[in-house]
Image (cartoon, rainbow, N blue to C red; front, top):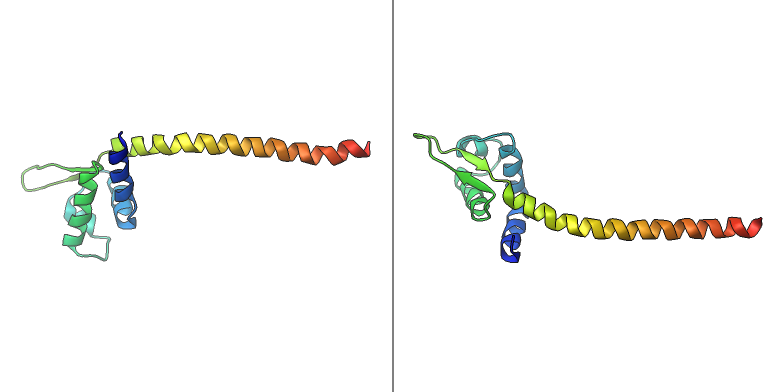
Amino acid sequence: MDGDQLSITFAALADPTRRAILARLAHGEVSVTELAAPFAISLPAVTKHLHVLERAGLVSRSRQAQWRPCKLEAAPLRAASGWIDDYREHWEASLDRLDTYLHQLQQEPADDQS
């Protein structure tokens, strides 16, 4: 995933309503009306959030007769997760080094008392 797509993905994920929409879609396809039901916002507002998610590639909509189900698309989430994991590995290694250093410091006074 290139940097621009990553920025688009994170911008889409920055809004709590959009994250809630994705969480709902993780349970399966639903119509826009069903998707909007639990939110205290208008149907047009939900549609605007869906457009942002679609531009980021996180949601797709298909047409089945009169029904236009919304579906979660996980590929951008996997790419964003991979980017985050690279930094998680860095911080875990740094914290492991800090933990080792702190254990060494704790052992020094005990060694001096013997």
